[in-house]
Image (cartoon, rainbow, N blue to C red; front, side, top):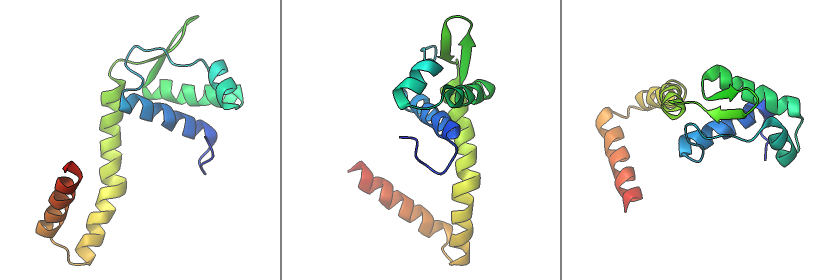
Length: 122
């Protein structure tokens, strides 16, 4: 499962972020312990702990001493906000730059987006 080029702890963190964004993990819901996570996915417990620590630092998870890790209140909104900012900066801005180099104007971009959206809605 965690076989991408990024370090495993980053892949784990991204996996949990996606679960929160998708609503599979809801605010206040308990997540697997690092021990359960490491056993289930056959990874080093320290790697799982590093991923969970990263998510705690980001405010996605919080630790309740002696009980476990939980999804923090507002985690989904926080992830959406940071994800949108990253999407525009890392993905859309370079595409818009390329469109400008190719002479594709705003009207053509909007027409394509509208057509694509209508096709997917059908």
